[in-house]
Image 1 (spheres, helix red, strand yellow):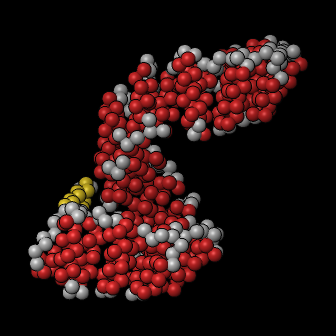
Image 2 (image 1 turned 45 degrees about the vertical axis):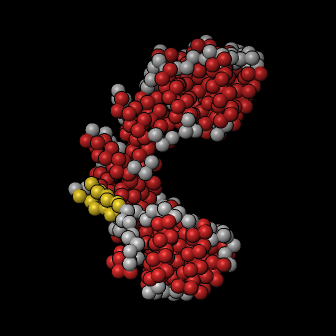
Image 3 (image 1 turned 180 degrees about the horizontal axis):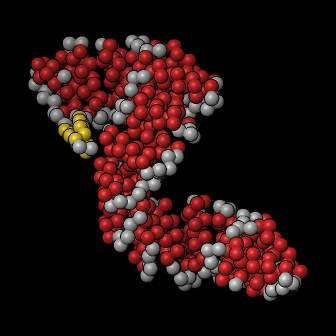
Amino acid sequence: MIRGLSLSDQPSEAICFYHRMYQQGQAGNHLTLIFVCKACARVPDIVLGQKVHVHAWKLGFESHVFVSNALIHMYAACGELGFARRAFDKMGERDLVSWNSLICGYSQCNNFKEVLDLFKAMLAANVKADSVTMVKIILACSFLGEWETADSMVKYIEDNQVAVDVYLGTTMIDMYGRRGLADLARGVFDRMHERSIVSWNAMITGYAKAGNVVAAQKLFDEMPKKDVISWTSMITGYSQANQFAEAVRLFKEMMAAEVKPDEITVASVLSACAHLGSLDVGKAVHDYIRKHGIKADVYVGNSLIDMYCKCGVVEKALEVFREMKTKDSVSWTSVISGLAVNGFADSALELFSQMLRECVRPTHGAFVGILLACAHAGLVDKGLYYFRSMEKVHGLIPEMKHYGCVVDLLSRSGNLDRAYVFIKRMPLVPDVVVWRIFLSACKLHGNVVLAEIAKNKLLELDPYNGGNYVLSSHTYAGSDRWDDAIKMRELMEDSNVQKPFGCSSIEVNSTTLCNSQSLPYPILKEESIKQDM
């Protein structure tokens, strides 16, 4: 009865039977203790487990290798690795199960370094590993990034002819997939005699991580059975490969197949909607989350904020933000940046002040958002104050993107001389983005002298970017220096530099249609350039 109940879906009943037996004066034997330990591990019940350990000691069964193995497993399942290790160390005789029980315990508690150390001790004791051991060892290597050790473990499997079952094969596929070694993962996949849905999902994820969405889609189509992880892996893969329209398409197919998405699925498809500006699909996903009780964790909330902000619906982004029970720094950064980019500078500044009042430490991204807000609102002094406070108050070293924001802040307000002095005094070497911001402002304000300085820097740093030539040509044209404008176009043609692509998109029936084309600039005469502008 104890054995049967310990293996059933009512392991606590096995413990009750053991109590009744013990109260009736029946001590049981080593098999009794083994199955009671299994029941305690499944409940889990560490208090009774320790009582069983005392009984084993009193009855002289503690030295029995199978009882000790059961005790190690019970303690490990209850998270008491210290007791498990003591039981292991006290054993006079150990078998493979003893080592595997402790290794599995450390693995379950994410003590992966201990897993590898214990495996080394196991090899020193001349105990040959099996597939159970190798699953945990390769898993530990994956989490620790010990790729050389992982490769040596694969060699160990081959040299010792360890049977590669469905669990070990899947673990090896996952290990190779994490490293982007899709071909090696596929080799393991093809050699497996038995595959589970987890094996297929691991292989699809491996292809997606390596950027080979074509192979991932082919494997996905061949799957005998798909679950939510299968669909999510493909949707995430397309999003990571910047094929956002495909990610949205696949999500619609998933809905048609009546597969319920989870929080990872919706976060991925919302990210795709944000990049496409697909508001209708994004709103439909939001409605689905509410109606079907999908766990709206902080990642889903952040994805919704990002989607609404990039689609220009900041009111809904703020609504999501205020409804979130848990917020992280990404939540604050996303909504502040979204407000700033969409022109709600005052709201962004107010929210940034609220974030500081609530003692949320601002990130580099939050300062990018607040500097953009100041630039759009023309708040030069306030923007400079926030920039200086980054390091002085918050201990954040400004990065190139922050210097670019300050150049934009000064340039937009017409302070081109101050912006140029700021660029020259930067502790970092200004990149092309900083100079392009400055050149754009020079064009806006018609300052040809500083524009030529910026142009020369850009042609030196990024000579094959057509945007630099076009911007410079427009600057000359804006000051009626048509000869110089035409020279820039000729230089662009002589250097075989292509004009940047223009792109437009519209959303029709929840489908985003994009059109991009490159229009060549005819180098003919002054009128043609004026018309081109």
